[in-house]
Amino acid sequence: MAEDFFDYDDVALPRKKDNLFLWTILILLLVGAAFACWLGSFYVFGHPEEARSYAILKKLKKIEAPRRFDVTAAPQGEFLTAQRAFEKFSTLTPLELDRENAELLRIYIKNYSETKKLVPYLRGKFDVMQATELTSSDCFPMGTVALMQAADYAQVVVEHVFPATGPNLEMSKRLLVPGYPFNIQKTNDVTAILHVERLADGRMLFTVVPLHYPSYAVTVGAGTFASEPPLDLNVAAALPITKEARLNEALKRFAQTRAGEPIKEEPQDAPKGPELVRLDSVPIGTTAPETGTIPEPQVAKAEPVRPVMATPRAPVTDLTMNLRPTPRPVPIATPIAVVRNPPGAEPPAVPAVPVKPVATPSAVAMTPPPVLVAKAVPATPAPVVPDVPAPPAPVVPPPAVSPTGVPLKPFVQSNPGVAPPTEASGTWRLYQPGAQPRGRTISSVEALALVDQATSGERLYLSGNFVVSARGDNKAVLRPKGEALPPGSSIRVVAEYPNGALPPDEGEIFARDANRAFEVRAITRADDGQTINVFVREVTR
Image 1 (cartoon, helix red, strand yellow):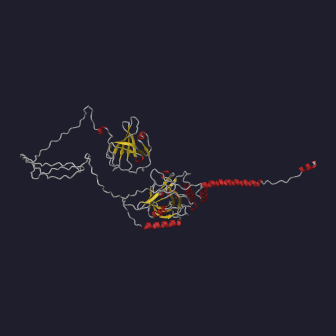
Image 2 (tube, helix red, strand yellow):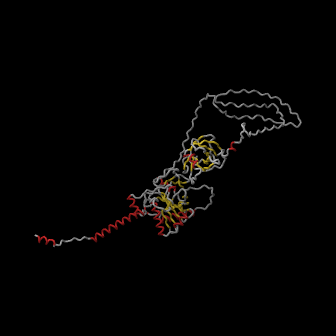
Image 3 (cartoon, one colour):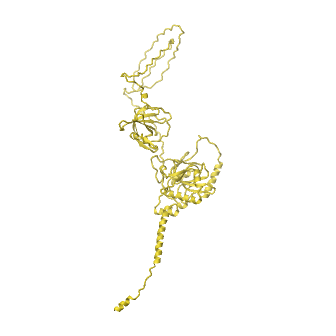
């Protein structure tokens, strides 16, 4: 038994292969795949302008649709005229231009949230050449694209995208008429450049879209349309939207149209023709929605005039009412000739003229008292009045000292600044209540704290309750009413009113809230060091 047991230890068992090499290859492949996925995710998220990357991000819901920017909250950028934009992009090589176009589209898709690059905005005057409806095969699937040419630099051609849906789409095709001028302003428009294409003849084609997506209208005519941010983009279609064949045809047709127009010089005051302009339909102080169309502007409609029915007046029996009699025309009596006596002659005697008494009519309720007129008697010859000049009335100077011995001075001369000066040139822009430019509304007490501080160009408005202490032709001096001022301080508000406006009467009390506040022009300290002068003006209708 023992020998059999020890003999068993000498038996060699079969050994299996470990295949360490294959496991090493597999692990390396998995590491490479993980590294590739890691790099691929960076590329997909970092390059949404690529069609495949954009499709992956849309399926993963990791990308947002373009949104609307307010003009004052748009991304920082530089505003380029047509010539300046041509000079900036025409010097780039084809490879640099492709890289620039990819970056412009990328930051637009990301809603300019991950860029420190200054966004190029286009501005200037352009002429509409052609308008075409967008389709699902274009980069912007719905809306209208208008081909335009720079009015002052013919080397620049612009395809302006107007994303729109529904009735706005149909109206945009009607209003974008070839030949209409279109103005992109620096202060009110943020039209970003998305793509730049170099044409065969040396021109530059710019694809632009307004980041504020406003409403548009025609100056002469009816109809408006509103643009809106697109809900989706067809990145695979690429830019530009207008292909070369259609672009050449539009340029040729536009050149033929311009060549057939007669050259005429119009005076500066001649009425302008139709022009496509932006329509400011968002009230000042409100924010436009980030998606969708801008609400239609509120247009005042005329109400039908109702006929006024005459109603009989009830008799008035109260005879104590303070009634003003209606003035009646006074008949002119026969003129009396004045005959001057020769020097040294005796004046003739003036005969007595009998005067007939006239009965006084009794007062009747609601009837003005009649005007009593003496009747002239024509049968009497005219008397001769001697030419004796009447003595001049003595001029009594005002007393210089009061009965108590106090020297007297005119009130306005002794109190300068109480009566406001007269200005006949009060002309400035007026706004509807609540539609003034943005600014901070302050009270009279807050104005005291700003007299020695700089406002850094901040627009200020003054509100509160006021009483009129003095009034001029177009100015009024106001005093705050009902506000607790610091001891030893006083405020004098000098309000200026525009031409045609009537300042309030002296002693009148009125209130102004934030919707009808005065615009503050200056806050100064008077010579006495205690009185604060706040110069304001009326800016609401």
